[in-house]
Amino acid sequence: MTQINRESNDDSTMQYERIPPAKGVFPFWYGGAASMFACLFTHPLDLAKVRLQTASQPGQNLLTIAIRIISSEGILGAYSGLSASLLRQATYSTTRFGIYEALKDYLTKANNNQDLSTAILLPCSMLAGGIGGLVGNPSDVVNIRMQNDSSLPKPARRNYRNALHGLARMAKEEGLGSWFRGLLPNLTRGVLMTASQVVSYDVAKKFLVKKLSFDETTRATHFSASLMAGLVATTVCSPADVVKTRIMNSAEKHQSIITVLTTAMRKEGPGFLFRGWFPSFIRLGPHTILTFVALEQLRTWRIAM
Image (cartoon, rainbow, N blue to C red; front, side):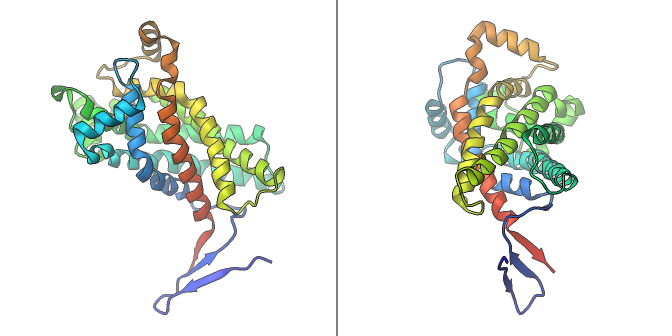
């Protein structure tokens, strides 16, 4: 029998119950909250990744980009566009994690509470990732623009004050269609990211627990499984991420994926598809670890009135 620890205040009837990470539906917003928490720590790495992916000249690396950001913009410059990053996680990650967990719980119950196979989890994650990419696309566009703004010549800078100001300016100056620029590669990335990240995490955790006798409730298990998920997700998503970043940052309207691919292939070679893989992993690895560790901790708490 599992022991439950209760904490209560004399001034309140609210009680917090510590429970093991178990089966069942958790609040829809848990995934978004965990991702926003991770974003606070990994945003500077995401900024360096975006700057590297949009660099006009090949041959640059994470170190030179980081030095340039700090020397020209200061320490606070490493958090350029933070409001947009948080908004992106609040929309994109909340949607994809929430839908995935809801689908997984529904199908688990329909399957008499038996573990679901990867063949079932993958379509669930792909659907959740696609919907998440659609919902989060506007915040993703403004996120990339704000992160890359300081690297542009002054006359070309957009100077959005925050994410909401950026979205309002985009709608006024470019039309609402600008919110969905790069939608196709973003949907592709959302599908690939969610499928490679959440499914690989579930599969890795199941492997660690059942084959290597890890304790399902420990942070060591969560850390190991999320590290594996970060490696898989970075590799699978890199090409779509590079193309998406370039389209969203472009000043040209209606730039197609084919145009971006053919131009970059001609000028930079096929290696451009994995440009920024290392900074992507340096960012996505910690982000994935922090997200899943925070998510697992959230799952162990519930509020009982």
